[in-house]
Length: 74
Image (cartoon, rainbow, N blue to C red; front, side, top):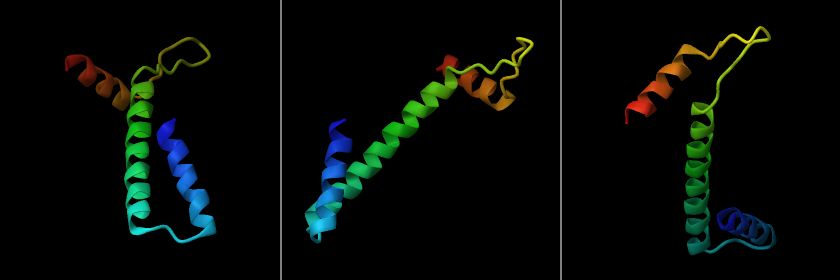
């Protein structure tokens, strides 16, 4: 969580003073990196998810099933 810690540190600093150009660039880069990691992890979680109704039947959306199949083919 070093990325998130640094993002938060920069956000706290920004509340007390203007960030330098370098700090603003770092903040933007870290936010972008954090979001990429978040999306990658969310996608991995979704690809491992199976949706089952109360009767025990697989009701996973077809789009998700296709994406899972694509991942298996890689």
